[in-house]
Image (cartoon, rainbow, N blue to C red; front, side, top):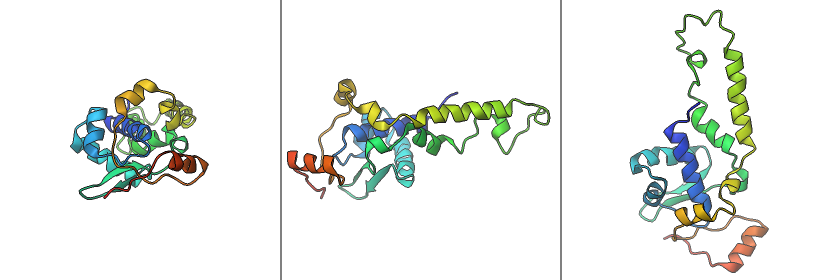
Length: 168
């Protein structure tokens, strides 16, 4: 199985956002950090926004940040958002021209295997990929305008420890 470049960039971008959790990140910074072209990343950012993984702010001082806490974003959910519309193999496609399709019994087995793949990733959360990962943090950390912290006890503690600066 091979994931699309868009799925790969989506996960990298979400990791970048998670490391810079309270920073309004810019497409240029994300593209440089995840080694992607800005044009390709723009498509990924758009899809991440449409799927509710990130919140985007347009304009000169715009950018994006996680729409949810990293502990609420499963890797399986991200992969499904980017991969679900793509057939894994021709027999999953509406345009199946395989001459064996009427008699082949492989399809249900492949279907179970793909679902097992996604199910395994459903148990993995974005927070687990970035927590206590000093190497990743060193690679992806940036300084930038802060975004308002999310509601909750952790957010209250963070607000008292670090001032929040609104993007202009």
